[in-house]
Image (cartoon, rainbow, N blue to C red; front, top):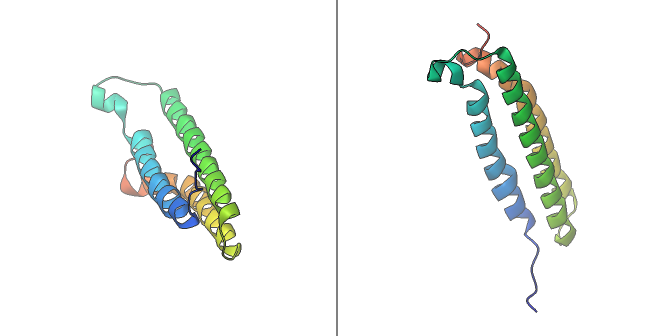
Length: 116
């Protein structure tokens, strides 16, 4: 039987924690703040925006949860100081919270928000 090696902590953090979540947050920002109704020439109810926001928050939150679980699994096989595992989890969690709070303000500053 082939033995599967667990993912390394560095790979889990940089590939999933930084790379995957960065791409996910960027596309989520674009998906939420792109006025699809104006692009298609259709008038959409404001509830559509709330639906997009709810879906993006749910997907980003679940993805952050999965990445944190992956990092903790990699941390179990990590031979070094366990403080690195806690630091990696803290960076991903704080980045998720920060982006959840700051993204609406960025949208207002860049003029891509539905509010004027």
